[in-house]
Length: 179
Image 1: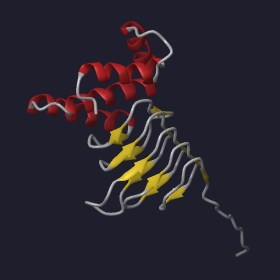
Image 2: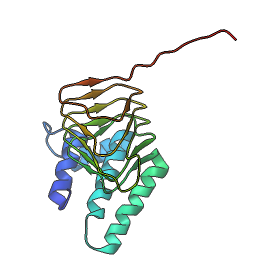
Image 3: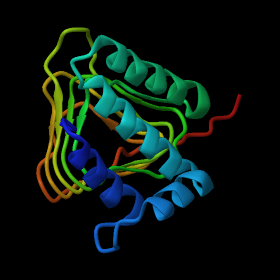
């Protein structure tokens, strides 16, 4: 993914402006300066692009940009994660994604979300197209598959496969007991 500058420009066009609008560098820079989600996406995609280069110096620039995203926003999306075009980070705060993720097009991740494996060196997680992940959600497992057009509710814990066209909600019960 993101092997050439034309692809990077395509990703920026889709994620920062919207594919239905005409591409403009001025509009891109204005959005990046005015909005934290757009700023985070701009630098995330640039770091992924630079990391995929063969030159060690350029690759290290990509790593450095990615580390600055962790410091500035608390967004730790590992550079090995394969995230397709159309990503949306609603509130880029405390988002952690491990390197074994393959995510489809037009997905959204909200704040305080963790997507990872329960142990190092395990199979990756596959997330389909048009998936919406609610705030404070946790997707942990080995070889999980989340289908297309899935909505994962806020504060959900996912540790099993979810079929296409589903809504996933973790039910919790509150109980108040006397002392």
